[in-house]
Image 1 (cartoon, rainbow, N blue to C red):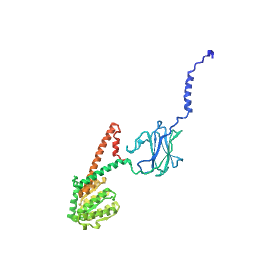
Image 2 (cartoon, rainbow, N blue to C red):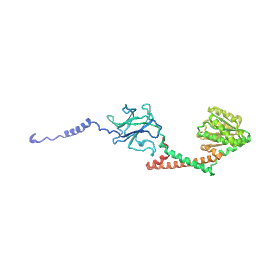
Image 3 (spheres, rainbow, N blue to C red):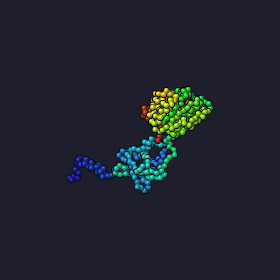
Image 4 (spheres, rainbow, N blue to C red):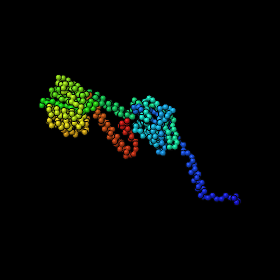
Length: 418
């Protein structure tokens, strides 16, 4: 070089050197190192019947949809480990679980997954299993420590604590109402024409010298409507025994028949006429739906009872029974909680008890103090729940309009969590 001077650098050479310098490290260097999941914990899944464990770990700053978490499980601390779950790193947080605030923290910075017993990896209550979590980008992985947990059944479901407290409140209201009724407090009962007509129907059967036909429906003794039907039968039997009127009670279920025999016998004894009870007044026909219906229709046409009672739960036989009874000129009183059958009974019967009117029939007819207090307490409880529904609907609407979850903790008080 003349005079010690360097030649000027060419612009193309600078650009090429800069591009090459940027490209070489990116192509030759490995990706950024992944951090292993922090604060990894394995514990029994709360509020369940067993066979499940819960895993939690803190969300990392690099969590994204491009990274994935892999969950491994083993029956021994040293393995072999089996991959039992995999999901994107920006999903599965504690806040995603549907649970109330008093039983489960709704944290958005902690990952959560529940592992339940399966054929691929069975979990046995009381037997520990071992778990670990790995964060991977497809080429490398960072694993957490190994943690052990044993599933077990929990005695109390803390997510249903609100239901338990509401049950205590309702039970307290009912007990207070029963106590007030026993002390002579008079409660208002809405007039129910169908129950007021029971005396008229029994009197009509007595005047005509014809029997009363009483049906308890198609349900078994596990149905609330069947239980209510047997209770009403006791009141009808008491009045019929006082008048000396015969009752015919055909059955589809032998257990219901046995219960009705005792109920009718007690009704006759309460009326002071134990001799009015006849063993053959309750009889079994068949469990088949339409064979039973045909047999009862035959009884209506042959014996022409003066009053027909249809109490309990019914299905497709409701119209066949009620229409046949109407053709014989009998006075008919029906009561059911089967919504789909109500139109048929309303059309073909003289009086129809709708839904809970059937449950209130025993208290309405007997005027027994304990039953009246129970009915009053239930009405107060239902009023409280209706008020809670109205307030809850208003709060939910306000929260939706304002775009804030501020009312969510209050609304969870009236929510059932599984």
